Image (cartoon, rainbow, N blue to C red):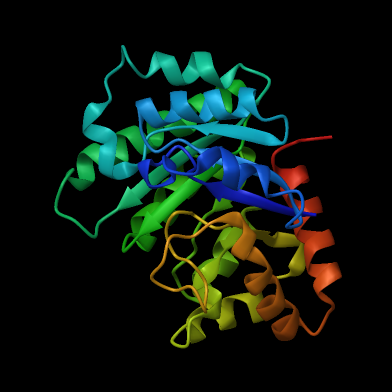
Length: 255
């Protein structure tokens, strides 16, 4: 059974058919899903989903693009949620320099602050990093993120950056981009990253794999990523599923 380590089923794009879609997962070979908070409201919704569905888990955190909503008062909510047994990570957190706002200074402040929460509650982190590789790695080093652990999700950098993350004990999150015709960089990352450091993810509703590129993504499309990964690694699809599921449970500390 596949473990989708990063999904956003609280997104409004799923409002029309959320329950029916989730009900189809077991038959489609999806065993577990971690729903990821992107802001305070999304973190609350992620916790709600994790308590509604026994095979769902939650991560709570504020995406860099939403960090302007944070202050020392409301960040306490993340700490309180993180102590719930269905919460398995702090995330998604990190840096995103694609847009001009929030400023890098604001993003860095709350990236560090959320890393500190993860260290305190002994949970891994889900790192979002876009067009910010150098600053992300610098903060990971400065904050000794290797002692916290986690994943750099929806990985978008080179094989060399991936190796630096893996050397710090982090996992690399791989999804639909691997199947894109222009996804050569991701192929190189998978070629050069050990299987015991790779996680499967959708980031749904975004980044659907071929042949659904451009459409709403969901966990039942992950077999397309599995097939491509198996071809790259020269192993069976069953092995890809087994290893990545073991990796997910190890990172999220799920027995």
